Image (tube, rainbow, N blue to C red):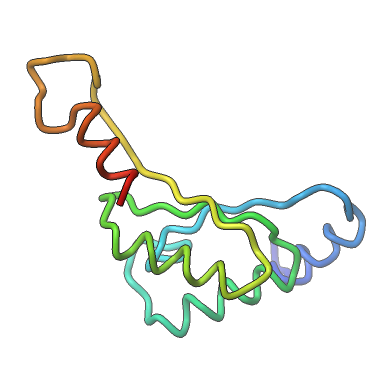
Amino acid sequence: LHECPWDRLKELRKRIPNVPFQMLLRGVNAVGYTSYPDNLVKEFVKKANECGVDIFRVFDSLNYIDNLKFGIEAVLETNGVAEGTICYTADLTDPSRPKYDLDYYLNLARE
């Protein structure tokens, strides 16, 4: 687009002031596919919030709780709303797949 994404976000916020903006945050991966230094992720979240992102849906593709907690804590250091999420796959009702059953995900959510 050959433009600054932060400027675009600020402009959208100015024109749409009463609608909450939401983004996905991949925990320690921010919006990428590799782990980034803690300070970079925290500054990214801070900047996103300053530019207009209100709600951060935080997840870790492998459901690694420490990465998920880090992302949530980074959001809570701003004025943003953190939505912690877990990823799931498979048929939760299939008894032949006992490792990732409903109890597994319920216990994960409790962590």
